[in-house]
Amino acid sequence: MNLHRPLILSIAALIPPADGRAGDDATRIALQYAPSPADNPLKGLVPYAGQGGRFPHSLEFDYVGLGEVMTGYDAFDWAPLDARLDAIAGRGHQAIFRVYLEYPGRLGILPEFLLRDGLAVHRYEVADTDGKQVETPDYEDERLRRALASFIAAMGDRYDGDPRLGFLTAGLLGHWGEWHTYPREELFASREVQREVLDAFEAAFESTPVLLRYPAGDDDGRMAPNARRPFGYHDDSFAWATLETGRRQDSWFYMALLRAAGPEALDAWKTRPIGGEIRPEAWGRVFDEDPGDPRIQDFRRCVEQTHASWLMDSGMSRRGVPDDRRRRAEAEVRRMGYEFHATTFEHGPAQSGKIPVAVTIENRGVAPFYADWRPEFGLIADGREVVPIPADGSLAGLLPGDPPRRWSASIATASLPEGGVTLALRVPNPMPGGLPVRFANASQDLDRPGWLSLGPIGR
Image (cartoon, rainbow, N blue to C red):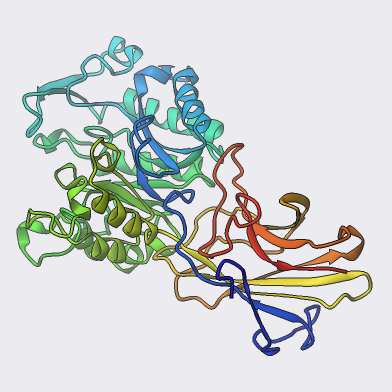
């Protein structure tokens, strides 16, 4: 038996027939599982822009300072941001982006028009950054608050739904846009200012997912409540301060904060993406059989508990990564986010000049797919694509453990070429040149790159 070809079954009742579907005389095919690629879109490890050539990836992370793109209260220069997005898209990847106001080690980056108008700035040394200084603005200043609301609204008008953008982290507040000013926490934005920023993002972005650094429930004394808002989260000390320890001093760890924020936050992953950054001290080492540091938490447990889809990491993109570390990393990364397995395919017989076809899809991953990308069938003959046909389904919202989702279509017999033809399936990326969703199947890319071969079909 050729293990690289779908297995033909003779079990007619494998998929129950229904109105408009193939009946008991249909041909049914079981599709063999194989691990999906580590660089499937909108998931996996994420290097900084342009630095990830040594590990498979589909996303890149980049920053831009607010002062680079905002020149007045209602005046913007989007060229620096567009240049970054275009460069990432030119490599066939989508961007995770963040806009910041303050960045340790970078001074003089606040918007000049705000400084001219008298915005107060506090300069001080940031702990654990080898003496780097930062400039924190007065977040309570009405002029800054007006500028933030204006900027977020304009950014949403321009970029919400932009296929170059995979995810947006809220940014803007705190060091690196990470919503803290440690060790000067008294300088951080008040809960009222945070609410204004959250309100602005919620109004401006309906399509592109926005992620927040810290989960917060109604009783959080420092952060504005966000558990019932439509935002995901990003854990930026992943596999270091992720799992609960039960110790009071670790109450800021991600899962502890998530639990404290309430059931809405714990279930956020079902509809809102979870990302983050592997803690730099754990880069690379987190994938070793023995990481060599008891503070590094088990990567698989962290992924399973957080339901993380993507994680920033620079360790696996460096030179000299050991082969065994790379193999383990690829295996673990495949488990992040979604993993879609096409389980069965059925077709025919022809009725009134059309052949009914259907495929069932299950999610073996830890999270759903958060974008509404549309699948399509295609006919492949001699390695060439012939006639894409829209399927009546979507990947969005299919949770791990849910019953398989069924997609179907009707193939006009007149469209079938003479001789052998293979029915195939794909979920194209809406960004030109972007990677398609590839399935966890042995016949993925078998006859044509980007397509899952389902089986032969004829008149």
